[in-house]
Length: 249
Image (cartoon, rainbow, N blue to C red):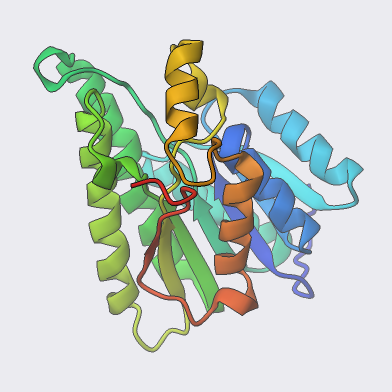
C-alpha cells in the first residue's frame, strides 16, 4: 500500500468491492483512472483477487477489511484511503445482504443482520462520505428495483432498500453548497452469485423474460451506470434513484 499521498488522480472507495456488482464497479472505476480502495467484510482471498485483477489491468488499488455497520472500522477505511491517496472523490456503497423469506416466516435474527448491513451500514458509510468527499465528488448508494416490483419473499430486503432511497434523497439536499452529488442505483434482476443462489432454472428464465430487453442484467450493465454517476459526465444528476433494470415493470 502506498504511504505517501498522491493527489493527481481521483480516488474511489467501493464497499462490497470484492465480488459481484461491487467488484465490477471497482474494476470499471479503476479502468476510468480512479485509484480504488476496496472495502470487504471478511473474504480476504476474494478481495486480494479483486485488487490483483485491477493491478494486472494497469490500475491502482488496495483492500481494507471493514464491517460497514461499524463506524470505527469505516472511519479507518476512509482514513487509509486519505493517507494513501490524499482524499476521496467517489464513494460507492455496494455492500449488502439479501435474505429471502415470506414476512410471516422470517427469522428476526436475519432481520437484525439485514438492518445492520443494509440500513445502518448505509448510514455509517454515507455519514463518512458526507464529511469527507472532496468538491466535485459523488456518492452512489445501492437500492433495488424490487422496492417497486414488490416480489413476494423480498419484504425485509425491499424495506431495507426503501430506507436507502429515503436516506439518499435527503442527504443530497443536506449537501447543498458542497458540489457533491448523492444518487442511488436500483438494479433489477442481475446475474450475480447473490441473485442466482437458490433459484432454479425455471425461476431464472422467468425473471430474465420480464424486461422488454428479455435478459438478466449483468454486473457490467450496472457498473456502467455507476461509472456515469461517479464521473464528471453524470455530475448534473443529483438526488435521484436510477432504476437500471432493462425496463422491467
